[in-house]
Length: 388
Image 1 (cartoon, rainbow, N blue to C red):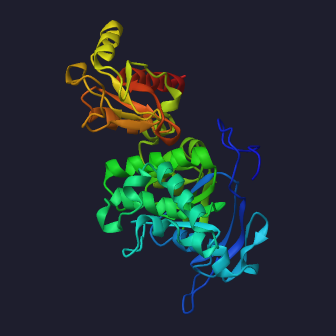
Image 2 (tube, rainbow, N blue to C red; image 1 turned 60 degrees about the vertical axis):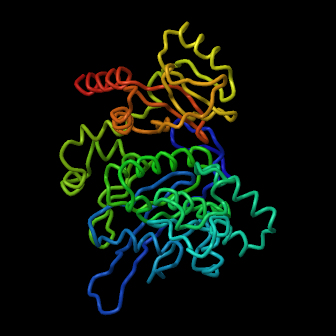
Image 3 (cartoon, rainbow, N blue to C red; image 1 turned 90 degrees about the vertical axis):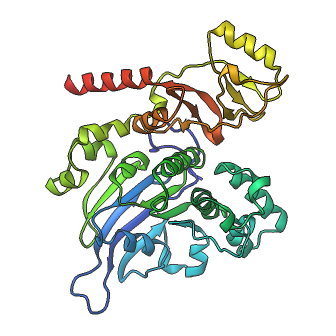
């Protein structure tokens, strides 16, 4: 573990990630005139998310796979926490690097619990420790442990399989996580939720995460830094999202980011920047009559139902409250993580009957409500600041 010195602004958790350094890394394949990766050098600070992005065939996935030696570098060095990866046994190395790919890549004949516990078992963990780790990780990725640990991949949705894939990548508590287009095979709504989940997990664990993506909006949303690559994995620009949007290094970067970069800047603003509303809440099991009375006194026509762990479970209208005590409503929940972008918040609000969205924090804890008024006020303030 390291301290938070040099960590992204606004973080105060201990960093469990490790610094990753690539120095003059080259990958040449037999029969090819030009290297797939040509002298790549960069430093990934401990505890940060770095997004690798660039045109198809530019070498971003090759660069990622050299970090865990799924592809062997031709020359150059890669160190993790100062240790050269080529001086380590490749199987031992991979057991200490999380690896998450598109679709989760789960073993179909294994339960969720056994999928997650593969690497800890290889490392010699006992059964009780593995079971406890599975429970904690399923909770971390937003899946009820008692409900999902015994299921098989075929019984899960695409988004649930990807969550289990993330949990498996975290199972042995590795300092470095590699992600190869992890959210590319799911629908846009599920992708947004998985991105939010990753931001929430990272806020708690502070791993070093390298993520390959083809989506500049995803790179802007998730990355502490973005690495834009040209052919041969030559660096076009390696910087923060703010710097890349505000000062592209050259025409290649400007064209890659695309027109409307001022609109993309909205992706830099987070829900956590806004003041949240605090409407009436109700605990599961509480007296319905008392909740109705409290909501009417507050002038609210709906209440947020929270479970015993402080997680939102529904947002019913007062008129929908039935029975003597509050139960978990059978209604879809429109929620966003506090690190969601304003664009994501607006998308969620548009699909909500309330014209607003529930905001959650670590492990799905309820924080408040974000509404159109708060978002539009923030956008107006940003436009004024940009114009001034």
